[in-house]
Image (tube, rainbow over the protein chains, first blue to last red):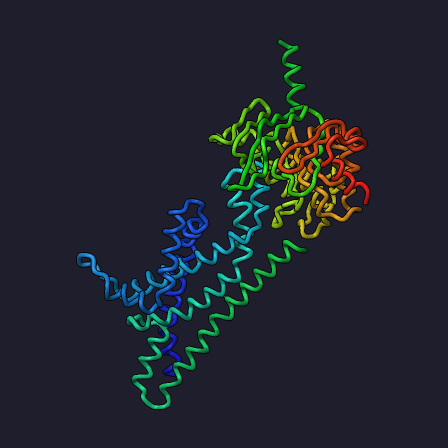
Length: 214
Length: 261
């Protein structure tokens, strides 16, 4: 069970990367999604360019750029912070695009009714639009989280000791057939971590649907 | 002093609306061409006409869901010129006095019927939850849907949803109600429930402007019939007189199409 304990050593780092980047994304994407749907053309354009730029470049390239390409004075990213910032920025861009889709999927009539009733803008946004948009995007957010969990393994390339990095280290030390074992275990662990997210998301979605239609 | 106070009060409960020279175009496409309408307090005005005439656009200009390019709107002591900058205060005052009911109901699907009616009261009028809920229950009872208070709109029929939407608009104590084809999305039998609520409202002296294809309703309930065609009002007056003896050829053609089918 050496292989298993080696892989497990990377688990806290995998979770740290995933949850930190997800937290950055979930919050940072809100203003960006609002900007993406802004009626002010320059605001929308800047947001659009940011999203397309970030999404257009592979995560591994972002991580290398952040880790090795940035030096401000004496400041340089250490591997973990480069990974968190990189995965975080990418999450901001992807989640903003998901939110935008949700915001725009709320029927126009909902806004018209809110305007006709004279609801203040904040009540319209937080009381009418956001709850409906959240119902629309919650499965996509969960899907993104599962993807992010697996993408966090890319951090192994900039020497962050998460699960895949630990597997590689073990494999290097055991150049026999045993070297494949940590990869099998890490695969199973990723599945084990993804399943509860997918399950929770489905339960939440079903519950929200039931609340509205039952 | 007392006399003027009472007349003011009487006027406050019966508010009319004056629209002058409203024009609207999308690019080169004219939708409203210099339309004026005077709605007397406590009266029902029915807007009829062929589709594409600009009826709905005109109605939506009254509460500025559509922004006319020019013209003036006078309501409840406020004069609004939508072609120029409209202050947030004037816009709020306008929407406070004018309630609206849509063809597609536009209830909030994530709220129960009760919350649909209470939420705007809390946010717009600052009523407490208890006050709002009490008023909502009165109104839901008035439209015959007290037992649906705890249901989400998805669980209500179209006619029920439209009556909830009417209750939601009434809960903000508007002086004028706009109805944009309120029964067009409903099958005829269900539409009757909605029309009967509207008849009661009219009988209570609510000022109403109704875009409709329900000719019976227009004839029996409205005080003024307004016929629109080609972005203009082509005829207006007593509904019975217009329906039995239209002056314009275009009106005659339209009425023949809707009445003799």
